[in-house]
Each structure stands twice: as structure tokens, then as C-alpha cells.
Length: 201
Ligand SMILES: [Zn+2]
Image (cartoon, rainbow, N blue to C red):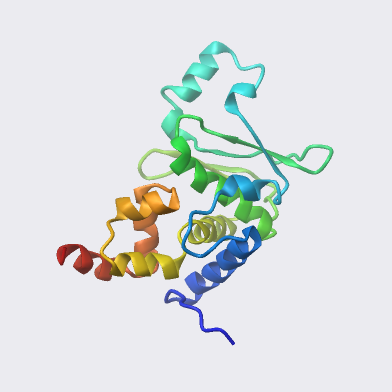
């Protein structure tokens, strides 16, 4: 049996194992960037460009890409197309790094077999941000956590942390945002190691 380098905590270990499966499926090495756009097709997701949406008034378009742009990152439509595919729309303002995480979450929902809950939940966070959920809360956490683990795998992350790479440098290697790398460093309990490696530079 192969020994895997897994993060502490049963939940995070489980997410890591699922994520390893995703990367295995994509056929990529554990230390290179995963392109979720390549996985989207396998997950039966059809990524549609925002510009291709017809029927939006100029005002709505301007609102979605202007004032409201920080309030939405994208998501999948809950009603599938006749051929079974689901449409995913991504915020074109958010850049490839953030978009990768959004799309990876949608891919995770499909690969993990999550069923949308019947009731769509729209709520406001403490910071006043509107969030909407299509899935149960535990499924949302699993999809995001597993997606993040697929984009930034623990073993490679740990090695880069030990080599003294900054979160910005690690983010570049995995083509994700610095915030996502720091989230992964924290949830996999590498933060102390990261801080001391940065201090030693
Ligand atoms: Zn989700």
C-alpha cells in the first residue's frame, strides 16, 4: 500500500483523497496546475461566456459587471439541458485565478454526486455579502474544500512551503489566487510552518 502525505483531520484527509482522485482522473502530476476547464466537460458542465447571454438589458449587464460584480462569482443552472448538461456561467471580471476556484467547485459538486436541495437558500453574510446555495451546507463545504484541495494539493503545497516559497509564488504555480493558497495553508495546518519558513528567508 502506498503511503500518502495527507493533512491532519479526518474531514480534510477525506477531501484530499477525493481531490487526488480528481487529479488522477485529469491525468496530471501532483505538483502542476489543474485546469478545471478540462474537467468541466467530463462533469457534463457547459461553460457559457457571460457575453453569450441574450436578453439582458444594458442596465442589468452594467449592474452585474459593475456595482454588483463583487457579489457573484458564478454557478451552475439547476435545470439541465435536454442532453443532461448543465450550464455554468462565470463572472468575466474575476480573472482566471478566481474563476478556476469557482468552476472547480461546480465540478466537485458533480463528481461528489451532490444533489441540489429543493430549496434555494439566499442569505446575507456578516459582511453584507449575498450568498446563495443550491446544495446542502455540508455539500457546499465539501465541494469547495475538495475543489481547493484539487487545485492546491497538500503534498506539493507542503513542499513549496518548506522550500520557503511565498503564497504569491505558490499561487502562480497552481494558477489560483493568493487567498486560495493561504486558505489551504491554514486548513491543512501548515500556517506555523509557513510563517517560520517566511521568517527564515
Ligand atoms: Zn456550490
